[in-house]
Image (cartoon, rainbow, N blue to C red):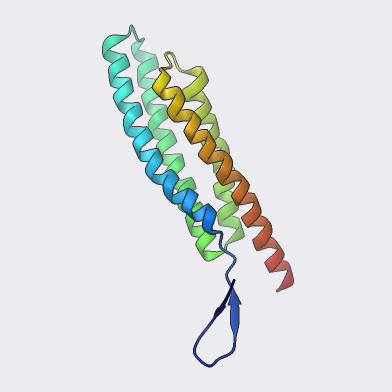
Length: 150
């Protein structure tokens, strides 16, 4: 899309930011907050009702806090990189997607107890990650092509 840079100047600037990527990053931010709160509540439930080894419970809660920090940084770099059209920021966000992917897989496969609600929430997170990965790669290619023409 071309945008006029001012009245009467006749100069146009092409906007390269990806709207679908920005929408996904925004929605994923809110979804991850809801997922994180649900996970904390489910850990409280599992800690009270199930015979949970205390070291495992503490480790899994620490892992959930680390996942939240990584996801915050990933979403920050993704949004910033997309809006400022910085290839490196979107690349860092894409690299951090791997860490979030491992965290989501942990929630599905490697926890001590996996509840059905956790499985559903984590699969939705994986769908977000897959879509964001596709749109991030498209955005990186778009930014790289535009930079090669400058």
